[in-house]
Amino acid sequence: MSLLWQARFFTTVNHLRDLPTLQVPEIAFAGRSNAGKSTAINLLCNQKKLAFASKTPGRTQHINYFSIGGAHVAQHRKDETKIDEIRALLVDLPGYGYAEVSGSAKLHWQQLLGDYVRRRQQLAALVLIVDSRRPFTELDVQMVEWFAPTGKPIHCILSKSDKLNRNDATNALRQARTFLGSYVDENNQQLPFTAQLFSALNRSGLEEANDRILELAGLTSAAGGETDAGDAAASGDDGEQV
Image 1 (cartoon, rainbow, N blue to C red):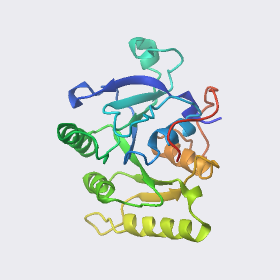
Image 2 (tube, rainbow, N blue to C red):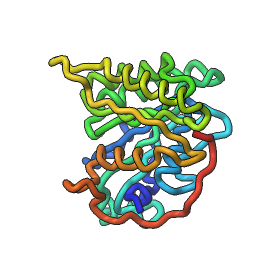
Image 3 (cartoon, rainbow, N blue to C red):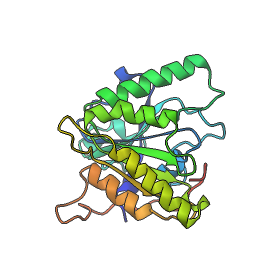
Image 4 (spheres, helix red, strand yellow):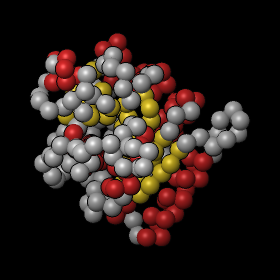
């Protein structure tokens, strides 16, 4: 079982000043509203309602943290002995791009998201959830543009791939890799950006995504395996479809 199955709710914040002070790797999940971000997190963590999938896209406005390790009891963030055992944090960023969200809320989200991905020292990598049928909207590109100067990895999960035929899915993946491959560092070397196809409906791409996220979080051994066994969790998923 995956170490990601250990994930438990840690805290939620609405301002950068309230971000956790733990010095552990953070893996942030970002994506357009309705791209399937919450569903992907829940499936990867083998839990039904870990990440909140609102029936009204764009309603989740906070940054939600889930801990890996030291997460055996509810509200464990108040238990110092448990906090010392936390090895990584998964970060669910607010979905972006939903038209019915007020202008003031959009402005707040933009500042919150932009400042977090550009300045958060503990942020080890960004997992970008993109609808494979509508790859890289203007707002997806903006997220990449914000994050690229950090030089840190992006792993792009092309969701809802079951809705594409094989040829279209192959083309979507090729286009995503071409787009991400266009980003280079000051030495003209490609940045560590990767992409894959993913579907929650048929669970395709789940193992690949799991392995990549564990690697980015530093939770794999030199031999490539997980460093220890995860806790069992309730299987299944609901909410938005990926």
